[in-house]
Amino acid sequence: MSNERPDYESGVGSKDRMELRVWLRLLTCTNLLEHGVRNRLKQTADTTLPRFDILAQLERQDGPMSMGDLSRRLMVSNGNITGLIDRLAREGLVARAASPNDRRVQMVSLTDKGAAFFKETADHHRAWVGEMMAGLSAEEMKGLHALLAKLKESILAAEKDNRLEAAE
Image: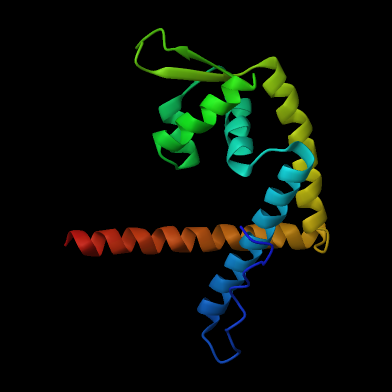
């Protein structure tokens, strides 16, 4: 990604519908947050967001996780996960082993080195996100979180309605 940060709101005016303006504001904020985290992960830990996300999923898991479960949780293909896991294993951050129940299934877990690396990187990550959101008070963040939950419910309800209409 270039150093230029896309601002999805740049072409939107006050005459545009509020739904469009909110959607583009959300996209812009997401893009800015992600860009900031990606850059800092690269500069501070010489890693990428997808690698960090894999380590985060493994850290939250109690015991090894199958490659399939990992790809489903991260909503990416098995092929994407395989290459990343290969590199993480070469670096000693994760370990792979065949499942005792099905030798075709690869199970992945954090190594001690991977757990230590993740803990340090996650501490930085929390601080970076906190810095980027420092302009909001605790009360404003609670309110925003509640509003985003309501928006999520609205989106899921619309998707459900859309699926029902398509099935008819």
